Image (cartoon, rainbow, N blue to C red; front, side):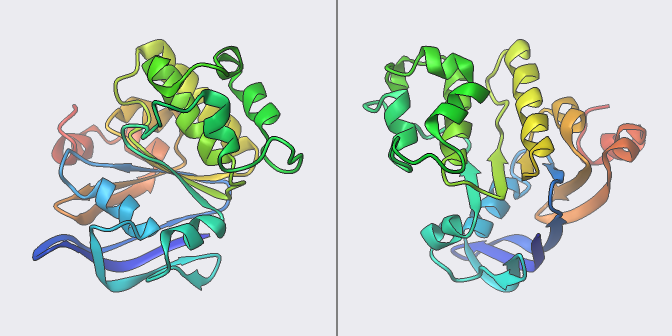
Length: 234
């Protein structure tokens, strides 16, 4: 579904991604792991053509069509949604307004406000609360629900467990698994290794802007030496 092939991304003269390649199949969760500053968020931004960075070589295709150079809003309309690091909510909009700004409440096809509230019942309870009145877990739920409003086939999730209590991390994992069961593909950037392995099918590890390891999640979980070398967690 998503194929990233040998992309090179730059911030000005700083060469950050060095020929990165990966793929995400339909209905698959691929975890993108690596220490801070290894290029994970840069890859997410490169896929969505959010600048900076600037992609100067390589290609990114989605369902066989190249995305390179296309405007970010066009990429979103093709079925790719992003749950950005830091949530990026609007403090002056209510929960309901965050969802209806992308799809009017009168629309009854695909992901609707009612369907989002069914998946995230806590948001239904907070529907009239503003973005700056929500807890960290509620904000993450809203960021995910907002992404669903464009009826995506692929979701890019950048550090969704960041700052969340363990109970909320577990809830987030159940949501990701539910979305996967519904047929969505997910590229998951995570610092929480064990949360990533709880939901991922495949794992890609970045180091210094390069792919240094790829395997299925079960193999990664049973390879402590490799984890210690690249992630420093074991």
